[in-house]
Length: 411
Image (cartoon, rainbow, N blue to C red; front, top):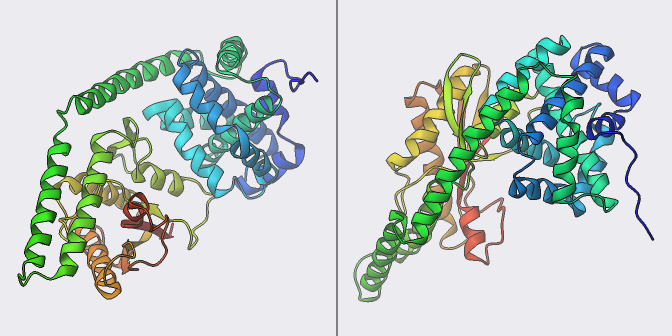
């Protein structure tokens, strides 16, 4: 039986067709803006985001990522979240997708897009940010409907985006497309650099491979000493080996650009940061800027560029960049308070793991205080092996469970 495609003269028309009167009224009430301004803002936000996609319509790899987001259960989850989009905002999982999706589309120009949206729709900056975040599930939801109907492929998505470009110009300033073209060019350059880094690693030139070998040899030597009757404590040996793997893994994540391309973003106090697309800094900034996402006890952000000496709570110099960024964010949002959580896997002695997790959380807190953040704005707690986020029966799972996380306790 032939499948049918949802009727819409363009992607933008289809996206805006998902905005019900109830959604618009609820969103207007939540943002304190008029329904007319909200409708205009959603149209502009959707058009701007689609324009960003148009600028990447020739990138099949990027389009494949979009299709993977809207296929199967992921796409259905996005569609299910639309019913509460106006009243309470997207679910936490969909909000996380939006926070990662927008930097993919706009690079370091998200603030520029928000300012344009605020001026064009006549809404506040915070409302503009929320409308931009709200446009993402609407767009992905419409694409999910196309995918479910069997009408979405890399080729068809590229063609639809290109065909929609003239329609988008009715919603956007004439200079908007040229700005996006400049951003796309910069992202392409950074992508090429990342590819060269991967190629270097494949050739064996990546210095982290050397570090990994040295750490492994050190662990073997320590185990040998322990088995030979040395006074070396076997618990530190185990912890040194496991934490060495964590250290290598975390460093590799930074070196191999798994956190996405770096881009520059401006904080409310004018400070400019250079941060990765999927890093904890960008996730934290998006959370703080989104008035629809309240403080709760379940939203934690994992640090992704912290390195500790093996078996200790001593931070390595490579951690400085991320800690300075977090301190700068704290200074730019003076009302914000946070809690630092330290975690381990479940191997070794539970009491020793709890102490190590507390010591590391304390170290991160102390470092932020030394960078100018008031001590009464931060608390630290070690949880040991409690609250695992992955399966402790695998090496990969244990590495994920050994982490330092951050939770906002006050916006």
